Length: 168
Image 1 (cartoon, rainbow, N blue to C red):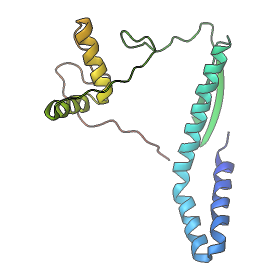
Image 2 (tube, rainbow, N blue to C red; image 1 turned 90 degrees about the vertical axis):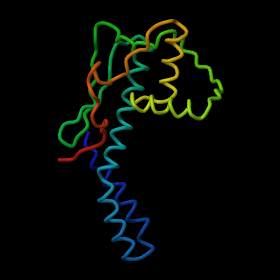
Image 3 (cartoon, rainbow, N blue to C red; image 1 turned 45 degrees about the vertical axis):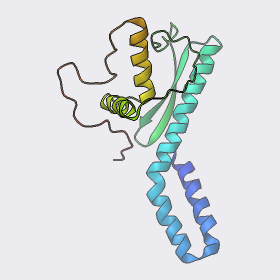
Image 4 (cartoon, rainbow, N blue to C red; image 1 turned 180 degrees about the vertical axis):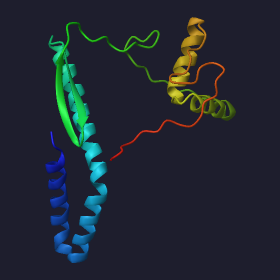
């Protein structure tokens, strides 16, 4: 699927919207649309990926064992449907997770809150995820789970995770 026609349509619409304001506004719209092309392309890919995930979920819900994937080839997005013999395994659920979520209010002394935030940041997880893991290990008497994607024991962690979009 070539995304260029969709991007060109957005570009034309932006320029048309700027036309009543004069030549300077049209030139600005042209420059802006060129600058935004990679961001718009990424947004379209994210929408396609979300749609593929939703379609996969619906296919599996009604008994079909298939997946829909978005694969990039050059500057084109290809939608690929794959059938498999066995149902895909669901991701492992956290210990004791029944699927229901309860919301609570927790009041912490400021120094403890700051310590929790620092510990969560050091493990690159949210404060909520860190607290759930800590509470789970305390309630079930288990040692805390290792941080997801963290360094191996005895190793230092360098840098931060980088995500984004690159264009060649």
